[in-house]
Length: 336
Image (cartoon, rainbow, N blue to C red; front, side, top):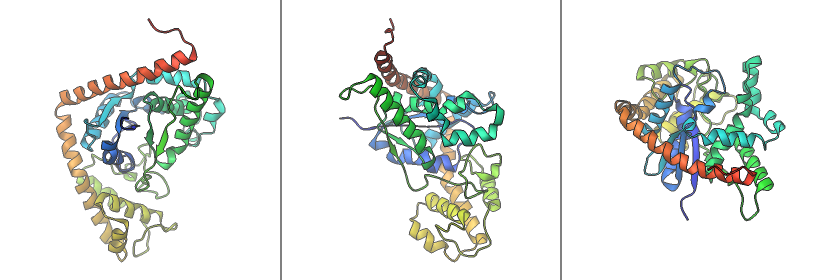
């Protein structure tokens, strides 16, 4: 028996931020030796909302480099570009034909994003979860690291896999592996610096809502100085009336590597004027090694190209095997 397999990815829509890192990438790194990992840059997902075609390729390279800079180890993990593996698009189409429309119309994230886009909402945004299902199912993933907000998408992936298996497979010989969620509690949902009730997001119009992994020390200090707080003296976790306080303490806990109990004791009597500089310095020091490694990787474009070339090749091999199994089960004429 080999190691269980993980599939995950992040969109290349601008710089990765602390939410991406603490909620996803850092957990990949901590667990990677226990699994066979496929980590992709999901550039096809990035165009389900309006995007900048002039920066898409550059952003895609930057995210791949940040995976490496954050500690993704090629001994355990494969890094690849979603659009460079054609099986993602083909399997998504096949799964479209087996997925009821009402399953997609009830997806919460579609409803939320569609409200923002109005009449400009695309079919791709509605269909985003089916492409995500194809991403996961192509690699026969055993586990999928997801935050709480992605649980519905993974449940849809499981439902689609079960439906395909019921239509075309046998109990002893399923067509697709049904994946399980791998949910990390600490840092699974990092909130906005501007509103502690909303998730930190690259789609937020305000740069002050997030700390990007490549922000300069001066920028980090500025963002934390301006972040939303409250007039209460003393800092503590889990107060529903103080979402920003809980969020900032959680950021400090995760970035400093301390226990929740230690942070609670250290910060109980602090005011914001004392805590904000502490958080800023902790964030700067936590991101410094990532930024240094990123600069070295980007200074050697040949190395990054070789990583992606090898990763795309390995991903293509794994994905093609699954795609051919689905094509055969659905009755398509074999390719010659």
